[in-house]
Image 1 (tube, rainbow, N blue to C red):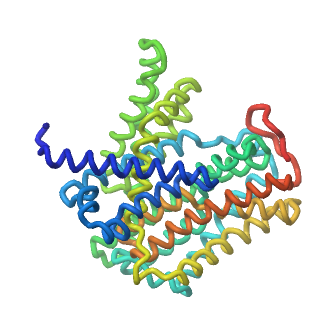
Image 2 (cartoon, rainbow, N blue to C red):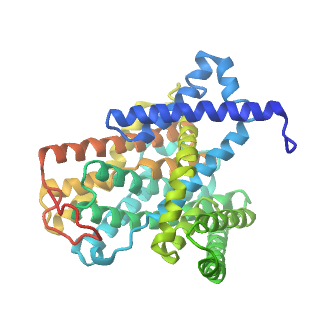
Length: 439
């Protein structure tokens, strides 16, 4: 069929079916024991990967992950990553009334700048600095590696935090809406910094002697392509949407338009050696800004029905596939990085909250929320590992820390809810709705 051999199709479908069923089953099991679904989906990839199934039952492993069909499975997994980034852009929270609260601007600065600066400066003094990948060579590669660690130390998992708050009926509290809004802006800055880190790393492959000039060239290229994409979107996206509104009944056109923009943009970025994973985030932001509420809701509903339900678990399973607790992995390395990340992100956040009048316990709530890495942490880990910027042991450390911090945040806020402890000391206006104002 279409030039594909029957055997190749059989291997692809068998692998997709096995991985999808395992991811859904373990994801559902994870939710039943009150941990994020993504932990079960990553565990499915690990269980079906070379570390477990490949060791215990090589024949079954070969059926699920055939060498000839593995590349097609990775393509499907990358689609899951793209849809996740698109959803992140669609769910971007504009500040509105929240921006007028004293904590808003201070939290954005306090959760972004100190951890990044300290991580960049302190990385060489820790053992995990010896786990840079083969591509992290020269001054550009070293700078890229340190930026990757800084982003991993600072980034916050908005989707998982939102899910935790919703499950605990806290999503309409001033605390939850302030945290989600700040985290959205905070993460947008960090995604931009990750693109800079990848642009720096791309400069190492050219062997240029002028490291600064080469890095500046690739950063400029990245910014130029993003600016061109924004200009094209301004020229075509809005007029095309306007045509559909006038000539088409309903809002069913919105999802194909957004997905078309996503794939065209990803192709453009790949053509000019710009990291394509930021395209869906960019497209999602544009859709958030330019689509009407009903149209955006149709896009979100369409994504939730198939793309996210099917492809996202496959991406998380692919993340778990590469996790390895073999001889090169060290729990001491995991403990070192966990303490490094929690202290560098948690202490400044705690201090900022205290300086704006929050009590000790309420300030600790902010520190816990902004120390949760979750899905974005896994995206950073998988992207850096795929580019050769970190080695396998540090990749495993990043993934385990991302999952562990997500589980820890869930446990913490569940305990806060059960004990009816305060989330924050003073009320802030909510964005919308008439949900509970606080605890």
